[in-house]
Length: 413
Image 1 (cartoon, one colour):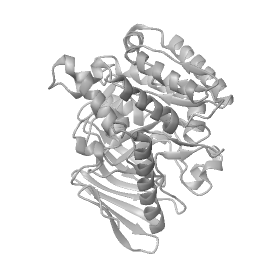
Image 2 (cartoon, rainbow, N blue to C red):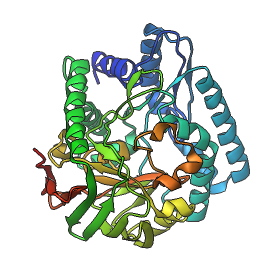
Image 3 (tube, rainbow, N blue to C red):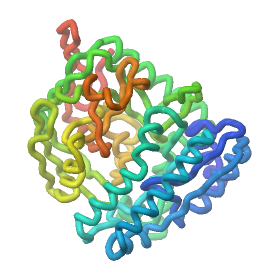
């Protein structure tokens, strides 16, 4: 990959993604996504761009998937938990200093293939518990944060098995830059225009004052009620101090929050889910009054069970997201086995913790979430349900029926 293109991508991540401010610390790599050995060169570009933007300090958390696999398989999980908690404590210390946070999700989709599902589930749970307090504040907009990605050989081989080994990583780089709107001469302007389009879509949806959404497609007949004061948002957020950032690069979604007890029917996934190193395919869920009462998967059922059975809140939904099948990522025709990309090629739902997308939700005490119809959980796991056979129809508070998506494409005027 040409160095100038990588530098432009790194600059985009720093200047638009986290929108780093002069004097601000930056953390690169945390939680499930430390900086992997194959990303060292890209991380150094990120560090250079961060200091050029005026960073006061840049912390890079390095990791290794090979070590992690062997440790999950054979190591002391109690000592691994202690490591996670120590790392999370340092991340929280930097958060108190006003840091911004950047992750590079790019794990091997089959990292934990063949390992004991109970040990994998335990590692996922303790990892989430260690970072729970930090992640709650992060997703509530207390800090600026962003996700960008870069290839690894194992990931590239999964995505492009049809290519010779020496061409796979380069091909995945091209996919990533294209889907992240970073392959042109002026990616910053491209992102500004894209965010304007997404915000306009949110405005149209918010003006409808939707009461329910009805999802219909193969294996899917689902009704989702929304809180009365809900609103739709995009991947472009802002901190309490008003610093704008883009949490996902790429992002094609507009998303909102379901009413915790307002989901009924059945839904079937349309794409594989790579979660915590385990691959889950053919997810089938049945809801009654918001709660998952039945679940199954064609592959990876044990991994799905560890998600849903993590706590009571992981039996409910926390997010609904609308993505058309004619987005650039979907039209690229690449299955990434990586949620950052696949969720932006497909409508999706999230099992677990809500984003508090209701009026006043940002300042709502967490203990009061349930009373306002917001779900809470240790988990927040997106799974994809979109296709060119999915129709979504809204019923507004006034009783008007409005088509939103038909055959996977937006039809809302």
